[in-house]
Image 1 (cartoon, rainbow, N blue to C red):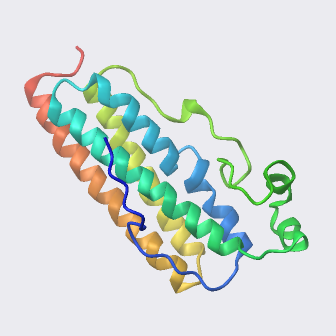
Image 2: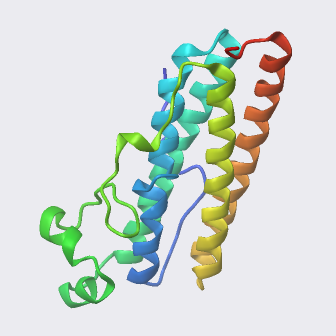
Image 3: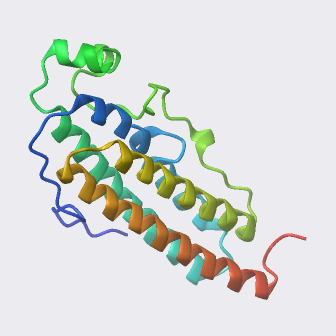
Amino acid sequence: MWAYEKRLEYPINIKRRDLKMAKVMLEQYGGGQSELAATLRYLNQRYTMPDEKGKNLLSDIATEEMAHIEMIATIIYQLTKGATIEELKEAGFDTNYAGHGLDLFPTDANGYIFNATYFAAVGDPVANLYEDMAAEQKARAIYENLINLATDPDVIAPLQFLRQREIVHFTRFKELCEEYEKKGYGKK
């Protein structure tokens, strides 16, 4: 189903460690509106799309969201690379370290573990697409919040790229939703 190219969708080369920024970036790694939640939401919903166009769109965007998970993980890794135990403690990463060492574990910025209830699917293609549009708008807003918190241009640039992709995904879902509404695909 996928062809993996061993490169990031957008280059990331962060030179300065910033554990506080890494901690807030966890929101897009394992939070309710995260790239992980989006990936699973769209892969799950694709099966109940009424035609190949819908299935393909959900598969395409889910695949891109996987690439975004890789980008977020890379950002977090580069922001924390070489951190000492004291730096981890100071930034609030000690709880993650206790259970996972330096491996990432899907949590939000507050440390709440990823939960499957984050992605909604109700078996109605139109309702699901409205959910998807809302999710993309929420992710866009979170990226704007992260951009506002960031001070390093090497962090801001990939966040701006990811924010723009949320807008593109919203637009693609909106177009499909409008088409499905015209065709009467929603449950009545």
